[in-house]
Image (cartoon, rainbow, N blue to C red; front, side, top):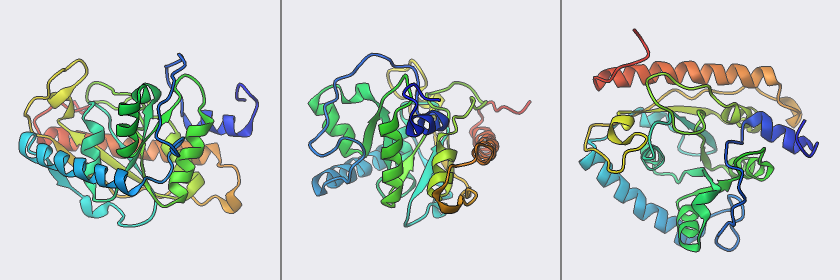
Amino acid sequence: MSTDGSPVGDRAKEAGIDAAETAAVELHLPDGHRRGEVLSLGQRAFYRFWWFVAQIIARCYFRLRIRGAGLVPRSGAFIVAPVHRSNLDSPVVALIGYRQMRFMGKESLWANDRSGWFMTALGGFPVKRGNADREALRACTEVLERGEPLVMFPEGTRQHGPTLGALFDGPAYLACRSGVPIIPVVLGGMERAMGKGAKVPRPTAIRLVVGEPLHPPVVEGGGRVPRRAVRELTQRLGEELQRMFDEVQAELGIPTSQP
């Protein structure tokens, strides 16, 4: 049961929309953007500008190569589930396609008016860390119902090394509930480019590989999502991400989880 005993709180906990930040944060959000609302024309133009800047930097400085971009749906909602090894992951994963991605981010990124506007215009919306965030779950659901792509890192926070950490059920839960596919994505060389503790990115080669969409089982009548279905989808996602991650890291000459 959730701390407030509500069904939505239960679902938020099941989805793994929580983490380790307990201090209250005063949010600075643009007007009309409490939780993942539709972006304005100006915000979309701002996103597009920085998308082109990120393309130039990634391809010139990091020698980015993308494989499997044709597997990204050109319309409709889907969930992008990437491996997470670097603070660079979010801007790089947005390069898998031209459509604007929506992201969840920790509340501290909205600590002042300037950063709040910037993060929102880039497609982000805050998630409360430290307990089940029902508003974030609703925001994710609404984003998908509007047909927008949503990025969720199934490992939660940044991890280290060649083996995936334990995956949260959030992407699988929302995929089952909304009936949208999960797109597994791996980013090779990101930890070498800018891992935990690094202050300056290194000009090393990175790769972005998109996998085949994973389709959830159908949940009839919008009923409660079976936990078994969610766990099985999470397991499929983890196996596919690990396989892809080993493959791309090996291509770059980086140690993998395989002996």
